[in-house]
Amino acid sequence: MQMCKAIDNPTLGNDTFAKLYHAANVYYNYTGDVKCFDLNDNSDPHDLGGWQWQMIMPTSGSNEDSIFPVYTETYTGHSRYCEKTYKVQPRPTWITTEFGGHKFLS
Image (tube, rainbow, N blue to C red; front, side, top):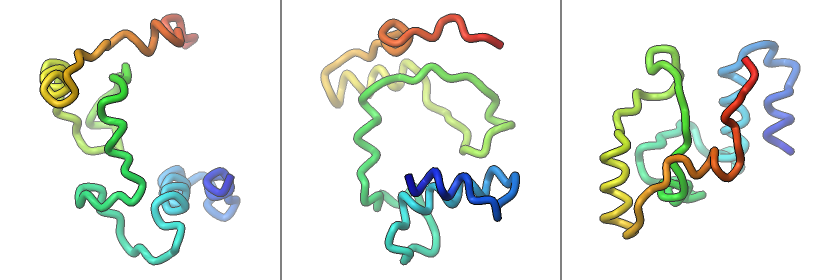
């Protein structure tokens, strides 16, 4: 609820990045004490790293047109990691098999 309020805050106008920042700030800085977010310092109090084994999300897009860092992982590398760490093989089509999404309108 509070994240939605941050995103819908009319004082932010159409500044998408500001809206995302304020929504993340509600989640990662609910105490108001954090001055900077360093997502690479392994200090995530919510332990979101646990999602890494859950699923392979089918995505597309350009690294040049994204606000996120370049993603250099490969399916082969991810598959090896899953096998070594969790003793399972990923099912890359499970999301669309389970929930659909093959025929999006454009």
